[in-house]
Length: 498
Image 1 (spheres, helix red, strand yellow):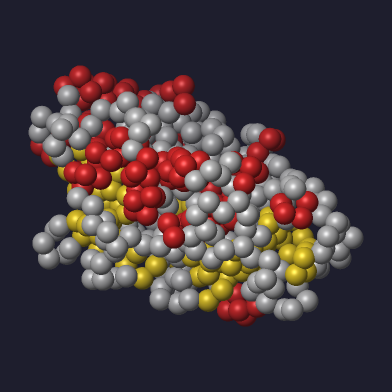
Image 2 (cartoon, helix red, strand yellow; image 1 turned 135 degrees about the horizontal axis):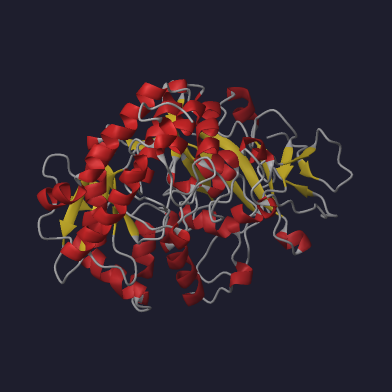
C-alpha cells in the first residue's frame, strides 16, 4: 500500500476517493425499481486525515478491552495463496460516525483478480466508502464473511458478558472475532482469540445440548466454545464447523489435517427436530433433480435432538475456495423481500460467470424452489464460487428446505408473481435464461415428477422421523405448486411461451 494513502475530506479529488457502487449500483439488474430504500448512501463528513498504512493506531483485541479497532487488514487465501487484498479503516474514533473506508492493496491491483467485479471493481478510486448500512458499511465481499442470525447472537452475548455495550462493537470488532474462521477465502487481522480455529473436540451430542441451552437464554459458559466452532456460518439456525474423518466417517469440532470440512446445523428455537430430516430429504430431491448438492448426513441424537450436516464447498483438501453470495455480488439487501427477483438472479449469474450454461442452472434452481415450496429464497441463499483457473460458477445448492416464506410469498418473484407461480411464468423466465421452450418444459416436468413423490422419498430416506401430519402438509403445498406448473391453457399444453 502506498505510504501516501490517506483518508481525506470531501475536497478529495475524484481519483482519490470514490463512492462505492455497492449501495445502489445493482439497480440496473431490476426490471423496474422495487425498493428505493435499499439504495442508501451515507455522506462523507470526516474532517481529519488518517494514514491508512500505519499500524500504530491499531488497538489489539483483548478481553474486556473498551477500545475500538480502527483498522483491519483483509487477506485473500484462496486456493493456497495468501496476500493482502485490502485494508479497512473505521472513522468512528475520529468522527463518532460508523463510516468505513476501504483501500485495495498494491498487490491486489497488480494481480488483477476481480473478487467483486460489479460493486467493487479494481479499477476506480483509491479509497472507497459509502457502503450501505445493510452491509454494516462494509464492502459486499467482506460483509459476506460475517455471520447473521446464530453467529451474531453468540457474538453479541459474549460481548455483553465481557461488559461491552453495542456502542463499542463495530464491524471491525466483529471481523476480528471471525479472524481466520470466515467462510470463503478471506481472513482478517488482527485476530481475537475467538477468531482462531477450534482445536477442542466436542461430541455432537454435547454440542446439540449446549446449543439448546443457549437458545433458552442459558449456557453462558458455552458461548466461547460455540463461537469458536459456530460463530462464522450464516443463517438463522444454529450451526457449527466440524471435520469428518474420511476413513471412519466420524466427526469432530477440532480442525484436523486430512479431515473433510463440514457444516452441521441444529433446529432453531421452537423448531421440531424433524426440520433436520426434512432438509435431508430436500437434499436428496435436489440430487434426483440433477442439481449439484454437497454430500449430506442426518443425525438422530439422544434426548429428542437432531442435526443435519453438509460438506462445505468453500473448502477442498484443506484449501479455501473463494465464494460470494448473490447479495454480495449485487449489493442487494437480502432482508428486504422482493429486492431482487429471479430475472435479476439470471442476469447476475450471466454477468458473474459469463457462461450461459450457468444461467440455465440458475433457472433449474428457480424451478425447484417453486415446485418444492422453498420460499426462503433470498439473495444470500445463492452463491458463486471461483475455480482455480479464475472462473466463477454457481455454487452447489445450500439452505434449501420447505419454507412458507414471508406471509406465504417467495422472497424472489418470477415475472412479478411471488405467491401462485404458473407454468406460463416459468416459461417466460426460461426465455430470459435463453432456454428453448421444449428444454424448459422438460426441466419443469421432470422436477414436478420428483416433487409429486416427496412423501414416498421421505418415508424411504428417513422412516418414521417426520410426522405424518408434517408430510401431509408439505405434500399438499407441493401438489398445489405442481398443479400450477403443469400444462395450462396459457401455454396451450405444448410448452410454448405466452
